[in-house]
Amino acid sequence: MFNFFKAKSKELNKDIDLSVLQTDIHSHLIPGVDDGSQSLEESISLLKQFEELGYKKVITTPHIYYNSFEEGINVLYEKLEELKLSAKASGVNIDIVLGGEHLLDDDISKRVQKNEAISFGDNYLLFEFPMRTEPMGFEAWLFNLQLAGYNLIIAHPERYAYLFDSRKLYTQLKDRGILFQMNFASLAGYYGKDTQTIAENLIKENMIDLIGSDCHGQRHIDALRKTLRNPFLKELIDSGKLINNKL
Ligand SMILES: [Fe+2]
Image 1: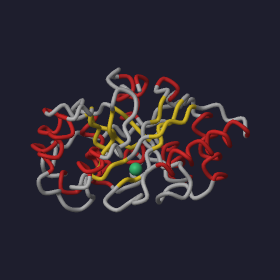
Image 2: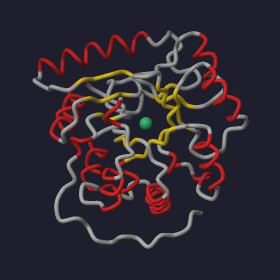
Image 3: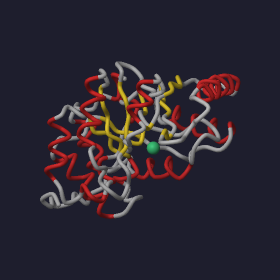
């Protein structure tokens, strides 16, 4: 595990202003397509809260993995349009952009060939590793994606248990130019103490490029709110290293 840094225990005395971020990079707000929001009403309620927190844009990133969306990904674009219309009708003034959270498996190269990988902005592609086991051969998959022109972002690097003990892997990913996206909820302890400690250490090591809600439902907004006086979050935002506002 990373060197232990003495935790800063002191909460801040006022809330951190998230409006400087402008864009949330990771969420599951397309209703009924994955384990995220299950209805338009739920998505609208969540979008309202993003707006209240100061966001101007959310990039919503349904899980895309082997065998998902066998009929093609058009359904995601159709549901995106429905969500945008509904948001507008409800007076929610926030841009909604479609991305994907791609599980790094051997299906990903096929999706790229079929134009079914969903990138956003300057060809950014969000991907995740499997939660429990290190994927065999991931270096070649990442290399091929970069060769295809994608700017790769790894979702929540602090959450993969097999990376905890391997500073080398984090460094390898960084050296390959892969951007790191942390979850707010990790700093709140939502995924457990180990993940929280790794998150804090990744901030200390200046390794985080983006912060996201990974919002599947109200519980993740609640976890996000718990970090609004977190000194590590303040340090991260004040570092000026985050590129959320460039997406
Ligand atoms: Fe996610």
